[in-house]
Length: 126
Image (cartoon, rainbow, N blue to C red; front, side):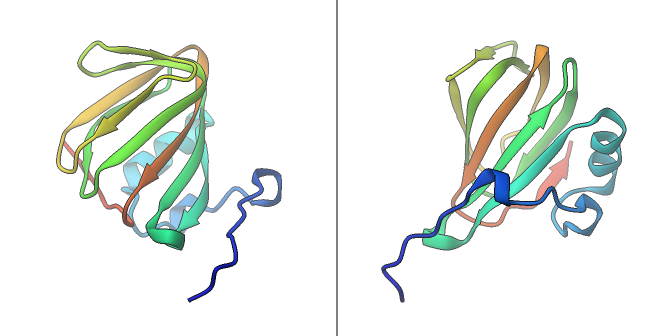
């Protein structure tokens, strides 16, 4: 075990080839590619965290789905409307529990957000 910090410098992290991601359904990967949605992987288990930085264009819709780990979503910029009608704006956040189905649509300016989970999460489409 090491006491050294793990740094994740966003500009130094490459955009991954999402087709190689073992946890993302190919339907979502293809949809994201067509519309310009993308993410970078940050922590991948360091300190028990799994985190991602994501950018979604205006109007991009994520269909109903669930994950097998709890997650925190923090909007850094833009807005989105959750499938239950709740609108989140810059600096808002939501905690979604494992197994809960949700979807969302990016607002008129798109959205930039960070997702944090306590484990490597699988995705199940509703």
